[in-house]
Length: 139
Image (cartoon, rainbow, N blue to C red):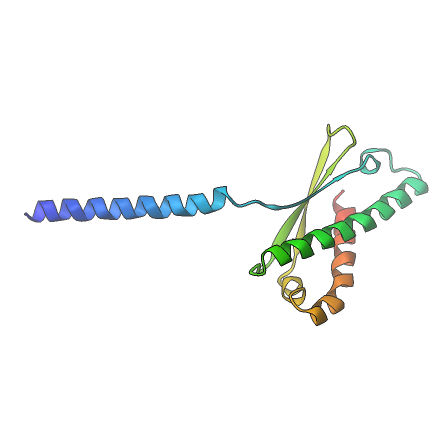
């Protein structure tokens, strides 16, 4: 009788472990990372002249605004976003043969600030500036 009880208990424990592990695995397989995709040939070309570097700087300014718009949209879709986050900024050449992947950090203070209008007003320029610098440093 004791063996039968142990066997049933062991089966239940194994079943619970399998269910718990499949639930955790299922959560991660459906997770869609935050991503912004952009197409540009400038970062893949020669950046030796000042004009090329200025063009890259101007495009990076536009990209940082695109990242901001994307992040605000994601926060509207999911108001429960908390903590430090990451946005994968993916840069392709025009033929999609080459790509650059830059993980852009979003600090927890920015996430909290963007949930209120006052916080947004105080921090959106900081977010754009930090994103701009981060993109240029990591290209």
